[in-house]
Length: 122
Image 1: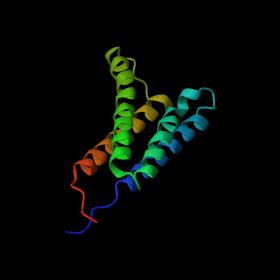
Image 2: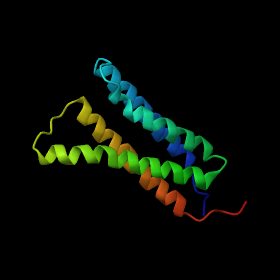
Image 3: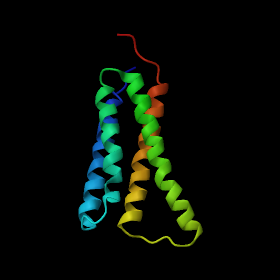
Image 4: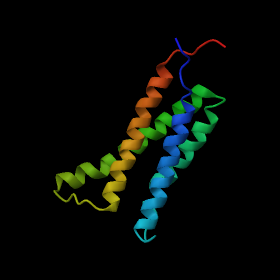
């Protein structure tokens, strides 16, 4: 069986995507609100965890998993009440929340699978 890919690489990639998402939305909305940078603020500690996972694999992956789950639940907690009121509007903020939820949700699944995978002896 071929060796499994290192899970720190997708973690770093997803974190960079979050940082770029936050920066892009901030610029596209005229740099009016720092809340547009929330995906970037969340991506920074996930990036750090991904970089640390190259050495201390399991603890850093668990930390990245917790952060990605929180990153998924945060926008969900805003989208559900807005949808219940019938006030959903496709604007940059909503699109950013959906993309951020997608990135963090997929990353959480990748990390769960990586953490559950048995480690190979060196």
